[in-house]
Structures are given as structure tokens and as C-alpha cells.
Length: 257
Ligand code: PGA
Image: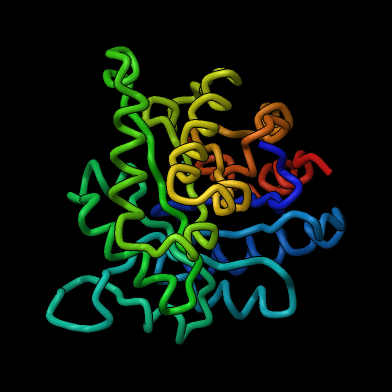
């Protein structure tokens, strides 16, 4: 679907990497590189560990760089030891939150049912939710990719009113491509992301034209241009390659104009 309505979005997911001191150094480096690029047409975000969020928010204050958390609880407070709530993130000046990353689903029991509550809770708090979906290698081999994506997209967005669908960013990340160096073939990425958009169109054609769907899984400076040029791909969620500011800035530069 034509991408005129959708500004490119490139997010770096640091995962459990970088101390506060490292984050500060990286932020200075990245902001200088982004200023030199002058790509104000691309929205850029860093998804940082909780302990670095305030450092990153203050470092990026006079820039357009968005700072995003990597998880949150659906309740706004309560007896949930070890969890963090949306108002705690907005108080820091955080812009968004990654929800349902495959590592959270796989290692920490994140469920579609919890995500269905987290997505509207994030939006209600004024946070941009980045909802991650994607199939395993076995599911793809069994021809189950569409079924898995349908389930994750439908359930994750189940409690969100149609008027707000386009306010979510969806990241399609085939699990077999995450951190493996193995990128989805261009046709696979385009096909899966067009399918995700079609699932949104089932609820609202207008939202489908406006919702941003990112590709994630071993995106690097060397393959970003061809992935970002795919018609339904509106950006990238970058893991390993975002840990280096020079490489990450090169991925931002690869977004089509
Ligand atoms: P990767 O991770 O780029 O290191 O494959 C992507 C992600 O998990 O978001």
C-alpha cells in the first residue's frame, strides 16, 4: 500500500545493554550524527533499558530523537514486584514503549492477553506502543506464519478502538531472523508486512493506510536500504546493529526519501 501517509520510523532496541555512562556517550555521538544527516523526515527512536531512560531523555531533550522503554505493566500501579507502570515512564519524559518483543514472550511469559491490555494502557498514558509480532522458524516451515500473525495482531489489538489503530506502530520480527544474522528475504518481509496491514484493514481501511509496520531481524547498514524500500515496510526495529551509533545512523540514512 502506498506509503505517502506514513513517515519512516527507525528504532534501535538496545535490549539489556549499556550502563548509564555508556548511554550518555552514545547519545552524544548519535545526536551529532543525526544532526549531520539532516533526515528530519525520518522518526528515530532508541528503546533503552529502564535505568538509562532518564539519561537518554535529558540527552535528547533539544532533539527529535524519541526515547522508548522496552516493556511496561498494564496497570498504572499496584502490587507487581519488579514491574514498571506507564505513569512512571511518562513522568521521566519517555515517548513510547516496546510491547510483546519476542524475547519477552519467549523468556518472560508475555501473553497476547496481557498485550491486549498493555496497548490501550500505553496509548491512554500518551505513550507510543510498538507492538512486536512474528513467527518462529518451525511455524514458518509448517506454513503457519499467517495464522500466527493473525492471532498476535488480532489479540494484541483486540481492546483498542478502531479510531486508535493507526496510533500504534507494529514491528514484524520473524523470530528466526532476530540476532541470527539471517534476514528475511525481501519477498518474505514484504509479504508478511502486507499481511499485517491487511489484518488492520479488516477493522479499518483508513487505519491500514496510516499504521506504520516495521521490519526487524538482523537489520544492518548493509541491508537496510533494500528492506526500507519495500512498499509496505515503513521502517525498522534494529537490535544488535543499533548498539553502535555510527552503524545505527547509517541505517537511518538508508531510509528512502
Ligand atoms: P537484531 O534484533 O537486529 O539483533 O536481530 C532485532 C530485535 O530483536 O528487535
